[in-house]
Length: 303
Image (cartoon, rainbow, N blue to C red; front, side, top):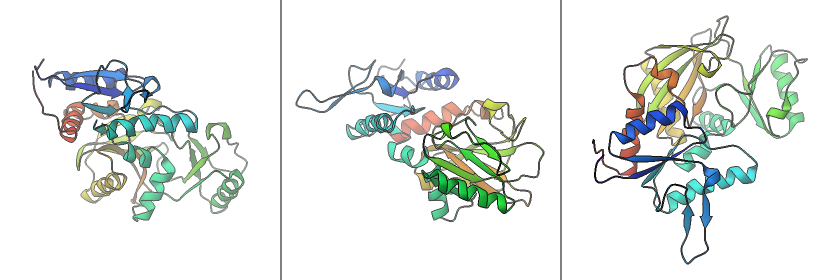
């Protein structure tokens, strides 16, 4: 271990495979990471200086890597983001930065930003008015369009519902009072097929094609993966989408419709890369950590 050892916070509720990969990449560069949960962090404003208590750290970490922001009530989510904003205010680099997380963790805002810059993304509706949403869904169905309903803070295909008929039942309990509806993009395949472009900094680290067992392609839901090289124009579209959100690393999901056009369906702010790692010899954790250290102004000291 290098003598000039830095303490790094990895923000996650579930370290798992990704936590182990990040730990290995940091430790072989001479750094000592520690997993923290935002639920366990506290603002200590009881003295004459602002401070945030973080378990495992006697002093503030040199930098924080965000692998997840927990859900909860509005107050809880705001509090968790406040911790990240507070760390940044106290001089701790946060990666991805909290402002970019706020813009991209919310699928509705992501669609809004992409539409505002004329980047191809499916038609969508985002509202807290269930009557308004219901009418819009019926309008889609009347035009022979299917829709996909997604939790705005969801990931890995959890809670996603596909609506093909007006009579289809919708589980509103998964939406927590706000609904995000996206027009279904028909790829022309009997099962779901889409693409993940993994962007680190302003460069594409790897890309893959995902084929689902059903219409859902997420690896966590049984999707199969293979390496793929996409057209430069499609890669540029992914890069532009990440730039709009302000993310330093991201997984951009795209679907190619049956006419050959690509559509960006999601820009993930805390993307998983376990499935993608199966398709490339490049150590993606190393690529991410090198960008993280450069972003944080830390040297890469190999032990």
